[in-house]
Image (spheres, rainbow, N blue to C red):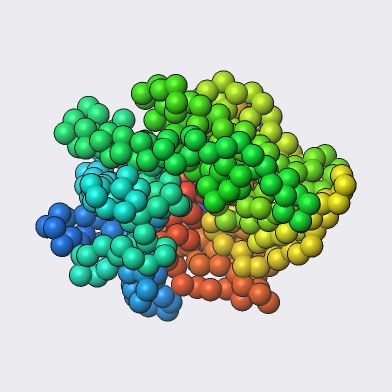
Length: 425
């Protein structure tokens, strides 16, 4: 039995209600794709293409699939994440079902790219309507440089290498989509002036997505760095450097100085969701030999992550700066969601991977306990027996037991990565 599983059992047996929870932690894997399979559907688009989708909403108690009236029923943001999850499944090479779904979801992402004379050509639409038509008008679905386009880039960059030998024709289509996207990205970001602005006294860069969006820049960094490794280009490397520099410029405070090396997400705020900056700096810093980026990531992990753990996690906070002093002007503990915990697990494990310092493994396990019941609600937020990741913990520690795509995938992502380190105990 894996050491990780043993550790989880020992911990859970000592936790309140631990016998019931420990029963869920037995077996060879913590990753259970049953609920993700429930969310999955194949759909025929209006143009005849058959694609794989993942439902954005699934409501308790019967976990029926729900369509949003403004957006649709599935989106690139979630399908790209689900595809990346399958791409890193340990049995992908032999599991034809997973192979089929990976291909169908990759087709979905390809089909939602805006091309030709479409507004935002090169970027991606996000949502799909139940009739198979693309939502091209709602604000969270238009083709633009936004989260869903970066998710698509990350997914396509990684899956292109997978298909290069297995399906060269599909790999060529993926490469063409990547080329269209990088052309748009270089046009829209490489020429931005390298300037700073001030928000409540906090100095922030203005050349990242939406000016200072280091959360989005982190996703861009991961995708662009993968593309750069596959097909090196001087202008792409220049943009990667600018993005990394902008992310580091959003780091505030340090050891003993609030907010303890946190990398702010946007303007003068930090939020837990999408807080992949440290992971991105570590991963890309290693790949492109940028030790200063790795050091900045470790500053956040070494100083800010322990603060988060002491606080029982946070949802967000805002700061202001007067002179050299930064102080909080607002702080929120809720809502707490899987998407706000998984990034810290990934960053801690990446730091462990690169340094083999056991303190990072310990930190990853401390964050993972949120999923297992060590949270303000005292409720297991990832149910291994069903594969459901619950949608969050709200004010007064009320649990939202719906289980949509994002919470399910982010929960599975956390444990899929943890499983890669059986020596952790």
